[in-house]
Length: 99
Image 1: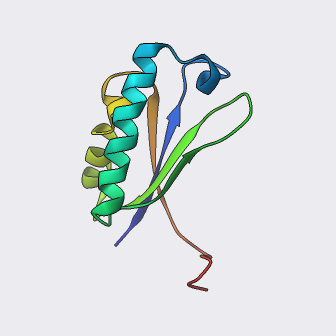
Image 2: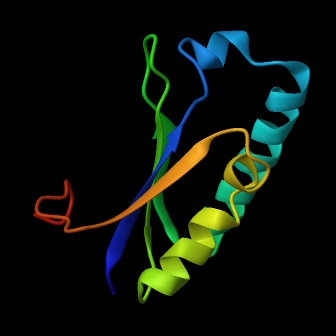
């Protein structure tokens, strides 16, 4: 099955440190959503980059671009317009524990 990555581009620098209460609530829903994807075996890994640019990333499996886009667009942080999403197909070339 193909592997996909979507990036969550924050609206400003230092986003993690400057989230409003409303943005933080959406990110609580985002975390719950990703936890369900992990439990369902869809999500491989997720997390933000650290420092002043807090780009998030989610790596997951989906059969095709349409299904991958549906996964990305169902993320509450993207669906509610808190961050912008960017989807790309990827190839896992090396993986600890597999290679």
